[in-house]
Image 1 (tube, rainbow, N blue to C red):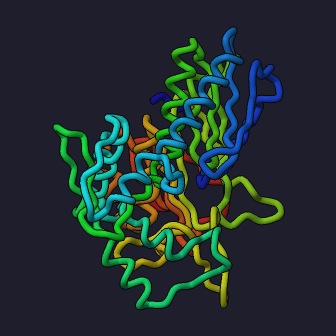
Image 2 (cartoon, rainbow, N blue to C red):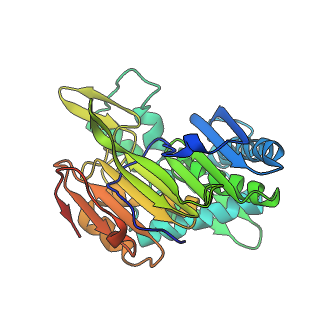
Length: 339
């Protein structure tokens, strides 16, 4: 990944094309999938065909990984929890393996068996529901990535206890963005932007040879300050997890959709975590893991990964960085900056 010096302080959920008004977009389409608006802008002779193929591929991935889709492999795994191992495609098996790898690295801060918690809380689906301690404890009994049984030879996934369930929402958008990028490359596209609601792939560079400039949303925006920073670079992916994406407030407490698998409650140590790297599925996983772990442990995890840079924002709006690209960040706000 090649990134030039930038003006930056980070936290993203939206795509900003600073300077792109001077560049003619050959093909740009938006569709709603993966529970968000997905926009792909591509440049080149086959841009129209490439964007159509990339969106079709993202739709395929969305159907494949959606735990709410009764025909998906994930749904089949969950229905057979406590009953039998489920044969899955090599694609799904490898994705579950990847998730398990980072679950181990993060000591369970990222855990795809959080499905019982997701269903219990129902953020975005239930009317500001806050479950009681006993309900949370019952759900937590079914949350443990270490219980997933994978058979490499048979390509099966088995959840040994009835009521267990996996949810690939913490990796799905990133993986879909990676697959869309591959489709664009197969169609000869070397300049494109994929925005999957906080998961962004900046492919190559702008058609005019300049680096892409990605605006990054402030986690606590004000009327005169919605973008906290700009990332300028070539061929990179950037993913943010934040407590402002799906949430509600009750009694001045913010309840959001990123759960700590150890407590069953929304994670509280950070308000956003942004990860920059060469693979969007991994960046998606890591942004969740770092968010759950908090500043100290989260950045310690990042320091073990030489291709990853992360920036976190604490509830006090302190900004902390780790990774090889720290020196490329210039902060323009009043937040405290540390490393």
